[in-house]
Image 1 (cartoon, helix red, strand yellow):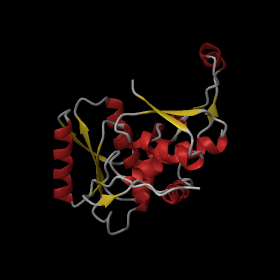
Image 2 (cartoon, helix red, strand yellow):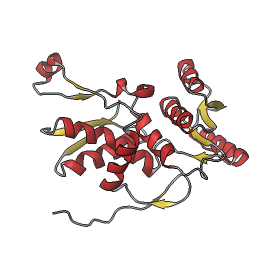
Image 3 (cartoon, one colour):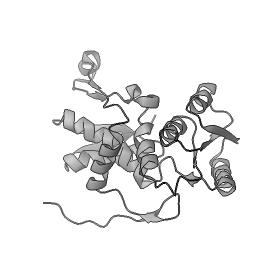
Image 4 (cartoon, one colour):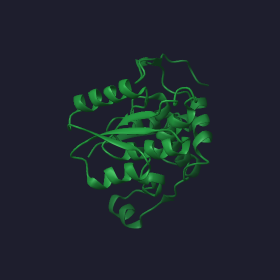
Length: 222
């Protein structure tokens, strides 16, 4: 039996208050993006199992469209926006993977997309974003410059800002990876997810515990 808990309220990238995505929102996000993305395989490694004395199951998002899990959150965010919200396009900030995912999702919606990227990002990342049809806007490699440049582009174009991780639709989309994992391999002791901005880890917590409330979730930082 589930109990009601107070959920912290925060401000989104559009300055609107939101709460953590509900399980129903995660289910709806998964249904929304499933026709567009891959249901990635879960693979194992006998060598790593022997080394650690445990059984590992890897959710292989490196086989995902655009090359990372980022397309899950990006496609959910972009596909759930109204025609009025995307009428002037979409803008985001990214060092690469999120930008490529937003560019791809923007192409699916056939809207103009701007991606603010630090000028020292790898060339392959620039090419990926541009390859999906988005326009790259360079900025200095600092968080403040990224935020300021994205705000300027938004002001000049009227584009809708989709934040890389501080967005409930992004988190709900990322949650679908853990949801799929637990649907495929239910008998797990713990789920481990990388953490940078926190969108994937937040989604992993919600996606895993939505199926197994007692699941242990660990954030892993390189």
